[in-house]
Length: 254
Image (cartoon, one colour):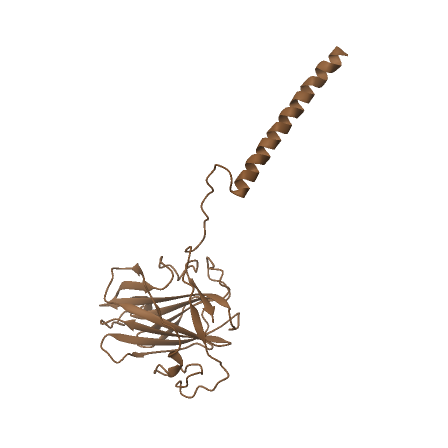
């Protein structure tokens, strides 16, 4: 009997120790999960900005006839004149310098959406016109980035696209862009300092509807003497939107 008791005691002692250890680990785990422990939780790591811009844009009934782009309720006509359709759409300012020093350049944009497309009007203030470079990346130009699933994808995938228009109104297809349904033009604003770029962008994988959210961004390139000197962007602050959409903002169709 003594031998048996001596054999049982270590097992009992071990069982008690394991039970106490399990209770301690459980208490630590619960404290961490409930935020009541002493350990400071790690940072919430995200792929893009913590709070990217989230504007809302005006809806225009696409069934209403838009004669020449001048009606109050119809979708715009990309014809070289900013029609009255744009008057009720709110303006948003590009404020992020992503390349070069601040120059006397600024830009505003508006967006109107329809069932199968988006219209974007960008007003650029740039007193030094230059489209002399061979590459559109080194000209006065406007870049529009679309991320239709709003997942801020690390690489371009289906529904992601980049559309480009230079100051002379030449349109270019960036990554993911489709020519069908894409329309663009550029024209002066009546001063010596600025110009408009107007674009119709086809929606490839979604339809426009109230409260739909998609990823979106606008960039303006400023060139002098055939060289890029300044890039201004609305949402992304890294200037790498040609490669990744992690930093684009969110457009809410309202």
